[in-house]
Length: 212
Image (cartoon, rainbow, N blue to C red; front, top):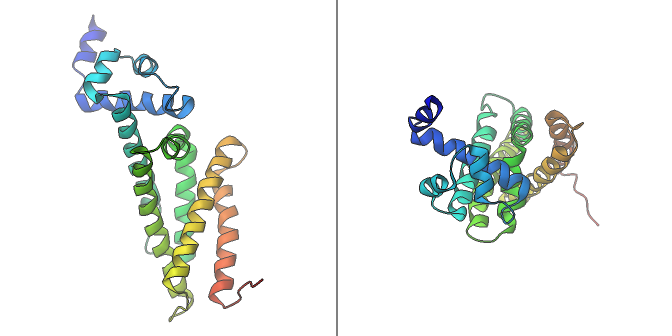
């Protein structure tokens, strides 16, 4: 009786987060189509009608999970970077924050990268918005690296944008790899990508380009 009264007094926002925590876990591990509202309600310790009351439908619940996990990932990357650091340290810090976050929240990463992007609209559009925000941030970091290395950088905007796309795509693939291999740490994944990207970026800024 006491436990039921405690649940009734739980603030709405807290209960919603409790249900979303359960939903992210189920969606991340089972997939959007295979996940059921019954499973989510059971894991959250609430009734299925209550899940529908708070979040209306499976689609709206999944969308809410995408938005929460996307906002958390973007915030983690931004918060991990200090403008006072040199350009290479900023890039390293951003990559490390990215891999630490995806390792700490593997179900959330699965929702964003494996589920939302493969089930069409409106889910794919939500993830695309997050990806554009990260791309814009990485583009600024690469441009800053060029400015720091050369007072009058020679890298055109189109080339900087292409490098940002390549870096973010590689980070996404490495996060999938790291999350399936417990021996790969966030720092190891970040160092792998940093060595690949920073060495190549350095050659490019020095005018040493590969040509077929």
